[in-house]
Image (cartoon, rainbow, N blue to C red):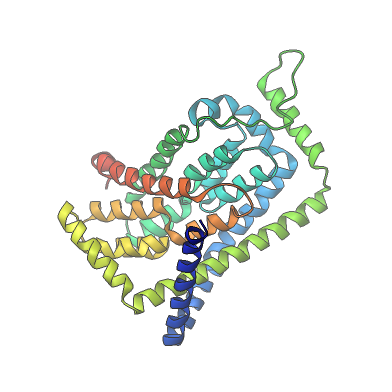
Length: 354
């Protein structure tokens, strides 16, 4: 047993040692990639994510989450086997992109509003790209073709919806959690809107913080989270650069080229897939510049967006570190999301493609 437990730790230690050695061999490249990752965090991620983190904290404190939870409970339960409060996570996760869904799920878990199975279902299909990145960066910036946005969005978000439907079968024995506000029995039948308003009021009273205190806590929590996200972005930027310099990326890409050739995909897209395995932005940019045919390039870009990259996975894991949510359901859901999205690209190409 002890030997089994120490194997992952030993492997992690060897990887850390390898990265440290590569940093010593390529110091200039390490500095450049660090600055590049820091620039991405400060110029793109910080202004895009920080307001959403603050707003989500405020909405939780004001009870807005409980309002929509009670209102949308009849929709969430039959479709996804989730309490209605999960609808807030779905909405915010899709609008603001990864890793906001994981952050909100962790908050709901900490407040006892979802259990482990429900949290794993939520994270599985709310870890998605945001529409601004999908349209502005990928369609316009990398592919230089805004008309690709409908097929990319339909495949990406359609795949996420299918994952949500499939994840309802995950851990089927687990019960559906209800918040203390929702457990109060009503003596007489009232409209769902009235019940939702009462749930919001009850949650606000239960929180009890003043507006000033709530705003202060929201900003502090968002800043701590952004520092973690920034550190992971810089770290993976360095790792990707070092692995490229050491030739590891080329070896992986060569193996994937053989696989792509066997299944009829352009071999040049293997490079984009390897980059996307680690980081979304690098992979999507490489897919847009591959020049192997728009349909296949779009399919690989959608796979990269749906997989999320190990950088996003690490961000999600850091957000879930204080919960009992497991990583394997998320990993399998990301893989399934990627392949389902690719299939949807080929299915929808004739209707939605430019």
